[in-house]
Image (cartoon, rainbow, N blue to C red; front, top):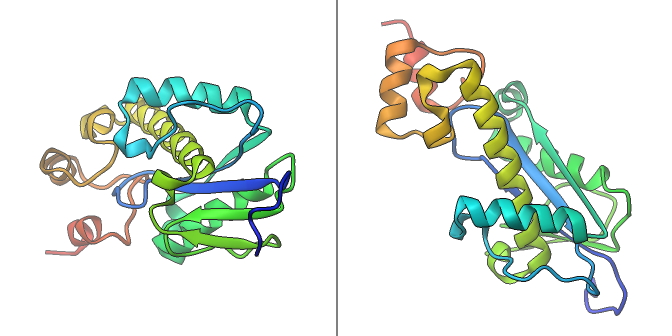
Amino acid sequence: MDLGTAGSLICGVDEAGRGPLAGPVFAAAVILDASNPVAGLADSKKLTEKTRDRLALLVRERSLAWAVASASVEEIDALNILQATLLAMRRAIEALVLQPDAVLVDGTHCPRIVHPVRAVVKGDSSVAAISAASILAKTARDAEMLRLHAQYPQYGLDRHKGYPTAAHLAALREHGVVDIYRRSFAPVRDLLRPV
């Protein structure tokens, strides 16, 4: 696939939330506007929360098209985390108001889509559109974890965002497994086993 064609619409795609024990996995798809660039784009994990929030706003304002989608805890448990992530990516791409000429996905796996698609290892650090997608996916997922925290404050989701920290695992042991947890993930599955 020739990605160097002038004027071609390149869509960057990335995910957020493959590793956590709780909540959906999110993906974003972004087609940047070359005539209205966003300065400071980088891998969302390397940015502060404040910078991510500021850049997410600019990406949404300045992009030719963007979309965020997710796959639910139930889908993660039914499909596995990789397939659920690819499903969220496909949903984000299909939700774009503009159809891209080509799609670049962070990582090593590509969703099944109608467009030419290529995986780019460490693409969130090297491809601006993927960096933009990583920022939108991460900020959308963080907002969802804050919403879930309001429902289930005892788990501390506002702090660890669902990742298996020592404090999170302790809270999970103390309060038990509720429906926001991925039952196919070992730390959760182990807690559900009869003693």
